[in-house]
Length: 248
Image (tube, rainbow, N blue to C red; front, side, top):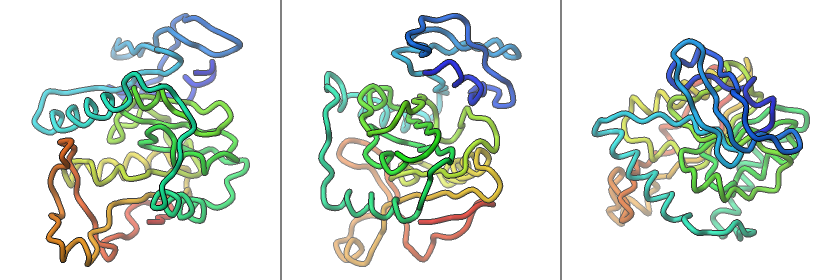
């Protein structure tokens, strides 16, 4: 985390309130370890390995579903060393679609909500500033997109601890379908809309419940073998839901 990242952040408990950097170990202008505190609600969040950990958890059936997914994803990255990853054919197609949807992002501020290890975040390599958020700390530790000093943040996609109207473009790859309720999915879109500047662009990808999957009787909602929740979307149901530009 660089020393200017706190200017972008807000308290995950009270999003209207700023976070203050309390000391920390700095290396060449970057904060590796320390604490961010909220002067209003007194909450404190640690900075670990240069990543502010702004994830909040609550005890409920829904948070249990999200916790299981986070645990599953963290487990998949445990003891994994960051290496150059190879995209599969489907992912290459998705990467190309994101590149076309986002367009020329030179000089723009961009955010990837649910970045994982950065497979798709690489399309933002020309942006002036890139924030990459995920709720899996293991994924962020293994983030490997070829970007210049991305700001990695552990946070909940449905409760973004970011300043309003901060970004020109937002992207999200295969995140919406793992959010377990319609209300939370609406909250996710609303949060991204909030942090976009007026006229900003959201580009996202979701599972498509196409005719082939329907003929195979694949359920449009359920759990993967890994116990990760999923829901799928028909292309006819995609449409503008934010004040900016929607690209699906």
